[in-house]
Image 1 (cartoon, rainbow, N blue to C red):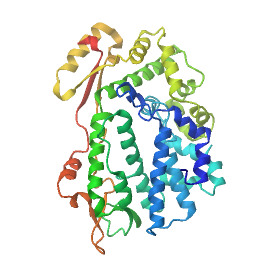
Image 2 (image 1 turned 90 degrees about the horizontal axis):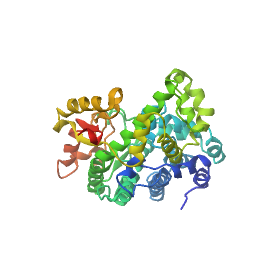
Image 3 (image 1 turned 180 degrees about the horizontal axis):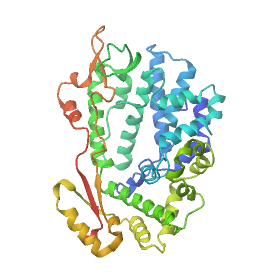
Image 4 (image 1 turned 120 degrees about the vertical axis):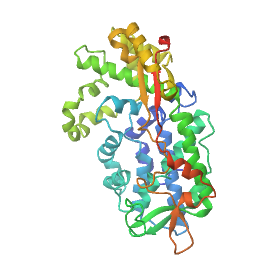
Length: 417
């Protein structure tokens, strides 16, 4: 059920329909063959969870929001992935300045602004919610926080489509026990990012369901998002784009489809003109991109006269992924493989031995002092306490102590071993 005519009109736009053609998990389908679901599905699911929470608060008279605010919150949940392109993380890694959040905001205030205003919904409010700058923190946390509708949807959806069971948890229980809580800055000073006003909290009845959610996220990162072969596929895609860009910048123009060439002309030199570019031809060209365009280019590059680009594309299309090992267990292997790679691939050896550090990739569930906490209500008049203090075990504390993956992977062409 579509809760508001605004949502239906947004779904029917070209900009939103494009998300049908962009996979939610990028190259993850090369490892989990069922991971063919799209960002279109995830966006609808996130919007629906947002609607369920706000509808319950309204019906139970917990929090009655004006219609325009509810519209903005539901629209923000629907449009939160609008700025993602095909294999979004690989594109952002290769083309500096191609930030999906910035692009999403430009699409909302540009092509989609007329649709929003026609339903008395201000595009600026939608962007403020997505930017965590909206006056009411509870809606920002509900959309993007430690316990938000975005994570609740993608964890379960990714779990179902990849076929793993780790992302399943009692979302209905969580949705039924989320509540808005009035706090003041003085009371909330342990976490200074929280402003005066309403914040998100959980009724004690939902604590075990939240604990299950936190562990689901932990396991999904290790089993799916940081899976060694998934990381290898993502790396190879980045290397393909990197090599193509090097050829382009060296004047050895690789074949580029017309609707992909704009990315290669958008170089670091014109980053100061980003605002103008995002509102003009750049944004229009970006909205024409989807997974099919990138796959078509990779298939064509398979026959490139450049041996490195051709080889990488053939490996990717044939799923001959680089082999990966944990750096911490093979400390001497990088030096040995680099020597062999130089002997076999000459000056291009660095394309075939690659370290993938994970120290900057957080799978942390709760980071005290940086993120807003997950608050648990305590007896009336006493406010809230952080959720790890409300559980019967120290399990959540165990997760919070180590928020970053240490070490990383070493990837290399299999024939080097």
